[in-house]
Image 1: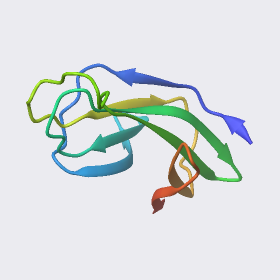
Image 2: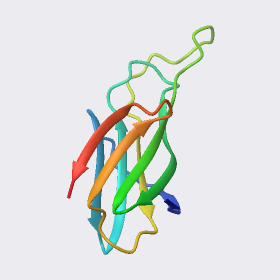
Image 3: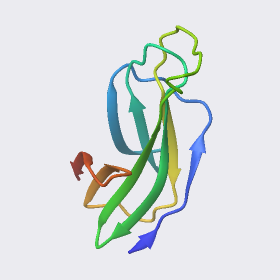
Length: 109
């Protein structure tokens, strides 16, 4: 198993629905994580780790929720993040998992 380096793209179009994508754009492999509509501020989504093993890329996704005891702005948000992967060849399969190991989405290329 090999760890894959990644960097976040600062400007990203917010997606209005929850989704996880892997695509090649401008010659670089990208992962897009979208949490969907959130009814208050304080929600977020992050890429925690990316590994590849025998052509299977696994992306570990982390979520942040607002503090239930704290104050949050009543505003609709669409937490979305986009990452560039330092990946040399196309993965055969991409698996998105949460930090508990639960599968969020599987993409077969």
